[in-house]
Image (cartoon, rainbow, N blue to C red):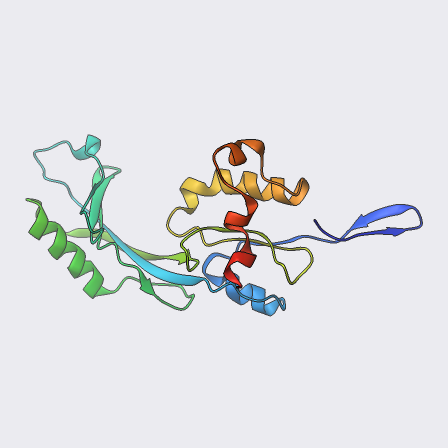
Amino acid sequence: MWPVTSRGGAVYQAPIFVNAAGAWADMVAAMAGVRPVGLVPKRRTAMLFDPPADQNSGNWPLVIDMDEQWYFKPDAGKLLGSPADETPIEPCDVQPEELDIAIAVDRIERMTNLKVGRIDHRWSGLRTFAEDKTVVVGFAPDAAGFFWLAGQGGYGIETSPAMATATASLIVDGKLPDRFAELGLSPADIAPDRLLG
C-alpha cells in the first residue's frame, strides 16, 4: 500500500498523487521523478455533417469498416464521421488536419452511398495508449504514493466508472473489488510495472 508513519501516537499516511493527466501523464511522471511507462498520445479526427435530408438517421447504428479505417454514427441530428486515425503526436492542444478530414470524406463516400456536403464542425482529440493498449492503473513501483490512472485510449468516457472504482479500491483497500476478479481482471493486468520490464 503506501507508507504509514507514527508520530506521538497519531498515524499519518503519505499523500497520494493520482496521475490522471491523459496525454501528459508520462510528462507529469517525469516531473515528479517517476519513471514514465511509455504512453503514446495519438490524434483522432472527427467531423459533423448533415445526413440525407429524406431519411431519419437518428436510429442508425455506428457503421465502421472491417479494418477500422473510417466510421460514422448519428450524433444529435447530424452524422459524426472519422478516418479512425491514430497518428502519434506529442501532447498538445491538437487541431484537425485538413488531409485527415479529406480522407474521412473520401472513405465514407467511396464505401457508402452517402455524400458528405458541408462539414459543420471538425475537431481532433488525443487518445493515449500504453504499448499493450491496456489501461495503466496502480501505484508506481518506484515512487511511494504515486498512482497511475492513464492510457484509457479512446474509451475514457466508457471506462471511467469502472476505472474510478478500480482506483478507489486499489488506493483504499489495496485490491480490486471482488466483481473485477470474478470477471478475470487482476491488479497485475493493469499495473504500471508490467510496462517497465
